[in-house]
Length: 108
Image (cartoon, rainbow, N blue to C red):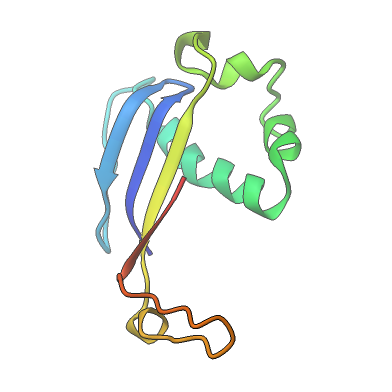
């Protein structure tokens, strides 16, 4: 489960950071960014499972600047944070000696 979602300069979202719980309600007036907020998760999913070109194509993005807040800038940032299950957090790899000490991971 995601514990935090962040977006900067992504479509209609100038900047948002939202802690998440097991139940989340998203309320706001029309054209306030609710759908774009959900698209943060969907866009990241499409990038990870396919690639950036695919993620842009299915959104009918003509130019990369269509993804930037107000069509301006040179970049946008997306991040999700998730809770790592205790069994995984305590895992020690015998191959690499890796030990996950924290119970949260952040992907940007």
